[in-house]
Amino acid sequence: MSALRERLSRYGLVAPMLAYAAGIAVLPIFFTLWLSLRRQMPIFNISEFVGLENYRFLIEDPRFWNALWNTAYFVVLAVGLELALGLGFAMLLHQRFRGRGIARALVLVPWAVPTVVAARFWEWILNADFGVLNYLLGTRINWLGDPFWAMHAAIVADVWKSTPFVVLLLLAGLQVIPEDLYRAARVDGAGAWQLFRHITLPLLKPVIFLVLLFRSMDAARVFDLIFVLTGGGPANETETLVVYSYKLMYRTLQFGYGSAVAVATFVCIFAMSMLYVMQLRKAWLVKS
Amino acid sequence: MKRALGGLLLVALLGLMLSFVLGPFVWQVITALKEPAQLSQLPPLLPEPPTAQNFAAVFSAPGFLRAGLNSVLVAVLTVLLAFALGVPASYALAKLPIAGRNPILATLLCLSMFPAIANVAPLYLLFVQLGLRDSVFAVVLSHSVFALPFTIWTLTSFFQEIPDDLYRAARVDGCGHLGILRHVVLPLAAPGLLSVGLLVLIFSWNEFLYAFTLTATEQSRTLPVAIALFPGLHEIPWGEIAAAAVLATLPTVALMLIFQRRIVSGLTAGAVKG
View 1 (tube, rainbow over the protein chains, first blue to last red):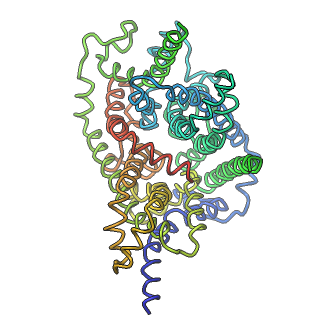
View 2: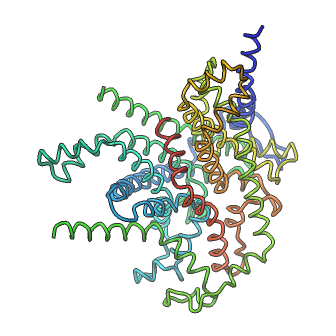
């Protein structure tokens, strides 16, 4: 009897959370899957089952492929730059100098800035007529209105906002590398580059993988930044998957097709993270 | 000589790094302090003289204060909800034999990987049905979609670090689970709770997609939504946008600078151990 009571009280701690999470987070995902099989336009009272029709349309929809390409381009370039810059920043902040604590705190500031606000910052810096960037460079480029520059402007803004997170994880990784390894290598006459190449980089590899995984997953669902900065324009040149899906659902009220694009988005993100995890496992197998 | 050069290089690189990181923020503050007429001319870079009129305008606009209040309400309620459900569950998952513990944790991790767009349409339609759309509560409930999995993952890893002996001793003394949670686990894990609470607060304060789709009027809009929708019908009020943006950033940046250590440990516990 008391064993039963003990059991009840134990599972009673977890059950409310499970029930709630199932209701608010798991069921909606299935509902999205179900919606993606329907034509659903609330204001016209249209609600009918259409099977895989939305997905057939999706495969032929050039705007979907454009959004997928834009998303991939954004992820690769933004995350690549964030890793490179983040590694540099982390190495710099790992040095010993006076005021290091303050410098480490200040570098994290952009991470705490709401993404919408970060987009507003950059929108003003990049303003074609009154922007400070054109003033400093002596140019008159319409950064956000030009098909080529708009995407790269969004990438720069994302790099600004997200590099701190990369720095934070890499710095934590650097701090657990034993100082002795460096000392021993220095005694053997290794130079700075060799230390980096043969000690820092290999030992940091697991953290780098994690950083890439987290940041890629996050960058693939970019929305706020692009929505505020360019709205997906000019001419859909910066429209990513989530922006497209959002517009379908809330601008044109096509909840069915919009859900199909949302499903495609998370399938892509899932496939990408599986690739990463497989690589990660391979790296671990080689190590052990 | 070589050492002095190295020091100089370090200072130069640090200077470059900090100007990239802080530049956009500083520029926004400068912009916020300029008179509207000065915004369309460069140089001068600095406001002459600095004016507080943009800040005054933002504060006198009723929508902004309301949005600030909504943001505070949403963030605090999101933390409370995530803690109410997450703390007991994390304690059980960390310390007690729970069947299906690993699948539960794995599912929660998967949930935190889903993009918000995968959830937002059903939640929107649900809240419309319940008449909850355009309320602060709808935003709080939607924020728990990411707040709860994050809370549980991170707290479970913090709770696991509490020595088993302490918990066993309390158990032998006849303490029930809730008693142990209150008298043993919570005091010991207080720094961890602070970390997680701060992070959830910041995530919720910054969140946009849910808050944007689930709100419709000023009565429930949060700050990011208000700033994204800043009126731009005729002439874009750049100075006021700058002032609003700076004000919306101050709370989270202040928390970040004050509690840097706690926030870093929360993020790395959630990320590296996971």
